[in-house]
Image 1 (cartoon, rainbow, N blue to C red):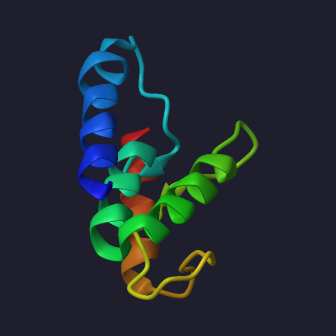
Image 2: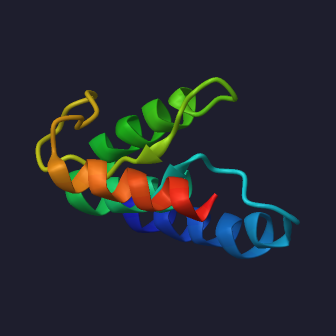
Length: 94
């Protein structure tokens, strides 16, 4: 099941997302890449993390660096120095 979902997401990345004229996702890694990483790390429970991430992605969110957590949780990692450094780099790129 996990393998099927990953292939489905890869198809989305290749055939739909790649044809968009501009970058849509506000987070790094992108929402589809986040979903694949979560599925590989947590199995089918990772789909819940991916869905929660997609629901968090809207026009009023800051976005930034949001990696898949080491342990299954729906909370974002805010206190990590590495996260803050990557957020600064992303802001410079925009």
